[in-house]
Amino acid sequence: MSAQFLWPMVFIVTPLPLIIYWLLPRAKDTTPQAIRMPMYARLQGQLGGNQKTASSTRWRVWMAILIWLLMVLAAARPQTIGEPVALPMHGRNLMLAVDISGSMQTQDMQLGDQLVSRLTAVKAVAGNFISRRAGDRLGLILFGEQAYLQAPLSFDRKTVKTLLDEAVIGLAGNKTAIGDAIALSVKRLRKQPEGNRVLILLTDGANTAGYISPLKAAELAQKEGIRIYTIGVGADQYAGGFFGQTINLGSDLDEATLKQVAAITGGEYYRARDLNALQAIYKKLDQLEPKAKDTVYFQDVHEWYAWPLGLALLLSMLSGLFISGSLTMPQTAGRQRENHYVR
Image 1: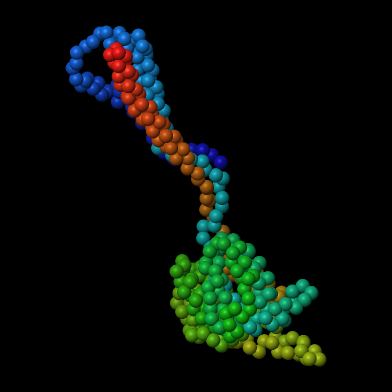
Image 2 (image 1 turned 60 degrees about the horizontal axis):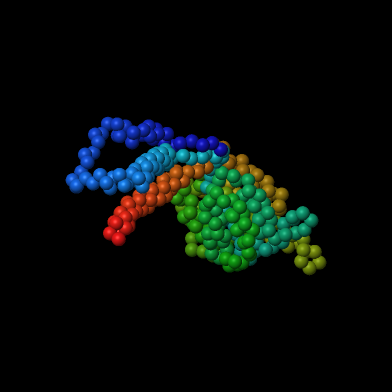
């Protein structure tokens, strides 16, 4: 941390009051003429009035000098600057659209030694992906029968990850509105700079709800320069049910449409049949959509001009109070002495 003055040239005006005192002519005495009474002058001298007046004048002069110096110090803008902190100059605008329809609760993904639901696997892998995207603005859309913006684009990766972890299956309905999710993503990404608008869409089914078809939404995304990477989640078949028969779990996934959506926008389609495949997909996305490398440096600046300025204001107020008090005291003392002589 270092200290500096933002406007050090202001100190040039420091001797300005002294220069004015030397150059400007003295003001003429405009005191009205009156009868001079030497006796009262001698009496005031005996009471120490001249010494008190001279001391009060010196005190006011030094007070004025101090107030002036504090005002010059405040005008120079003293500040302290913290250590430089590296910040990314620019990054990607990544929107994640995650399917939370009823079929995402199917437990066909291996996580460690146990089978977990598709959404649980997505949370685990996508959460790590979000944590690695330093410098990118991330947003989150959850969709089922309807699409909702859960987190707008921001650099707050921790909040986006938390909101993904808190997603609940069936919260947006049991059907799947892929087209609406893409359209909502286009609406949020179109305001961002061109060339770094990316949507990553994860689903395990086909478009069965919504107001716009996935292909029509993909055409809108293509016009806005948004690349879409689609990921089909879920195993092709699973040994379970009664007597261990094989159940086909991937029959609802519309891979043809997901491939077309990716092709229209210049993205790619990936198939995540298990957790390892899903992790490999996100690692590949890290390579396809690299993090920002250019950085700028930010330094935290603390301003201190308010302290000398506030002190100058306080001293001005105190000085004004003392001066007004000194002007009234001699008159009171004069009346007391006058009353004494009358008696």
